[in-house]
Amino acid sequence: MNQCRSFDSSLPEVDLEDQVELFMKRQAQLESGEAFSEGRDPNSIIGGDQVDEEQAKTYCREVFEILKGLKKNRDMSVSEIKLIVSIEDPRARERASERHRGESKQPG
Image 1 (spheres, rainbow, N blue to C red):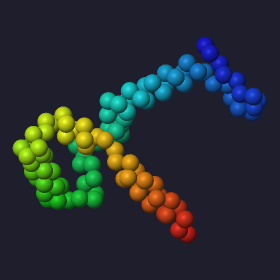
Image 2 (cartoon, rainbow, N blue to C red):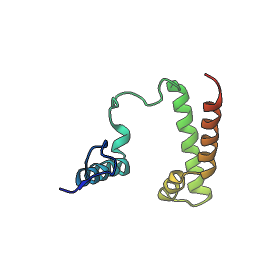
Image 3 (cartoon, one colour):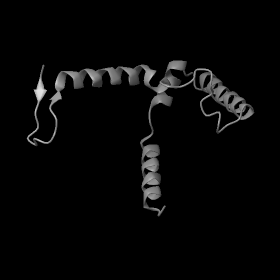
Image 4 (cartoon, one colour):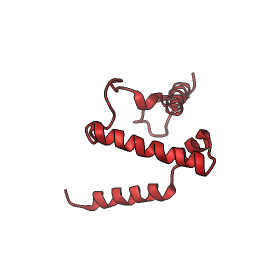
């Protein structure tokens, strides 16, 4: 057992092996997608409180048509499309950060 003791005696000792194991388990859950499905009812629709069923179907059709167009017109494979969708746009992250900063500055 590897114990890590802080220079500050008011902080508790930490077992490094346990902390590493917990971290690795959490990373595996995040990478597999398991972490995103925790605590959710598998029969409930995610976002159902924001979009009704007809809107969701419309959005699905639109996305499907765009994907078909990418495959046909740009000769993209499904794997290539998944890769592009999974890449986070740094500009979107910056806009979200700015929006968060703006909300925190407003008196509540």
